[in-house]
Amino acid sequence: MRLRSLLASTAVLAITATAALAVGSPAQATTDDPTVAKSLAAEVQKGGKVRAIIEIEHGQSLADVARTAEAASSETKVISKAGSDGFLVATIDKPTLAELKTDSRVKAIYKDEVSKPTLDVSTKLIGSDKANQAGWTGKGSTIAILDTGIDRDHPFFAGRIVGEACFSSSDFDPYYLAVLVCPNGADAKPGTRPLRPQHGHRPSAGPGPGHV
Image (cartoon, rainbow, N blue to C red; front, top):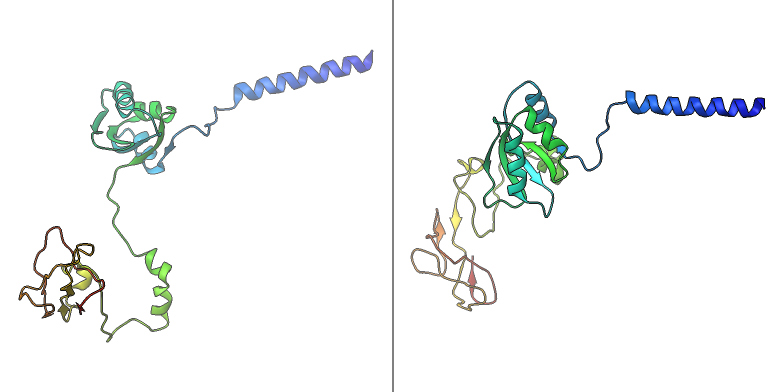
């Protein structure tokens, strides 16, 4: 009899503890909840309106999510959804973010901001940072770039281009779409900026009398 009483007491304690945990613990995010950028969440929590990129789950309707976002707050305005594939842009506030954070149709919410390109990853990827530390900087070297074209006005090339040459071919095989692009009509012309503008064509290398 005593054993039965002890078991009953244990069961009551277990149920009570479980109920207390269920009531006292905050709701946990599920794996289906959208990913929200921390910087965006922090700014919205301060009471501001933030321009956001809202990524939609595959197969969901952009128009439906846009309507949900705008219905959540009079301060929310969808800026663009036309022509996009799985994204829409909107200015959102705290009520709208709270609504979208629990919307299973939404995959992620990012702050729409300018990301400037840097060399913090690419240089390490090719090992140039280690080469520079070892004293190999390329100073005094001349580098040849063989390409269909570069942006010669890019800041990286400022004051560094010592000469250019026209890469052309007189092979008119349509498979290669090769055309003469030298302004003097010749197969090749060395010098500065020797290529004339072309539309719908590109210099190409293939079988035939190519010139460098």
